[in-house]
Image 1 (cartoon, rainbow, N blue to C red):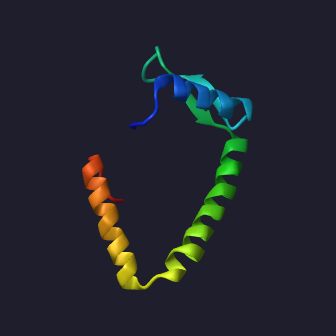
Image 2: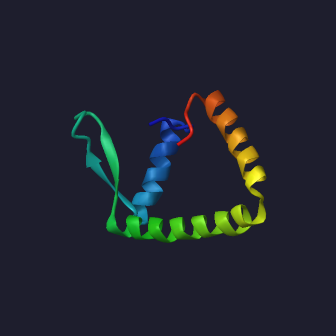
Length: 90
């Protein structure tokens, strides 16, 4: 997994998520020197709510407002962006 944040920024963000009880830090089984942030039950519940809100918004404001041809054009743009970032489209 790649992140576009500094190590200190990630640490700060995980700290805030931990304080909100959305994640907890656990030792990394694959590398004893590392720590993993593991989502808690409260974190999963928050993710479920956020995911539903996100999917509903994308449908209502994007999918329902465009033609199939426009969606195909958006897909082409996303493919080009993903290729420049070195990734692939899912």
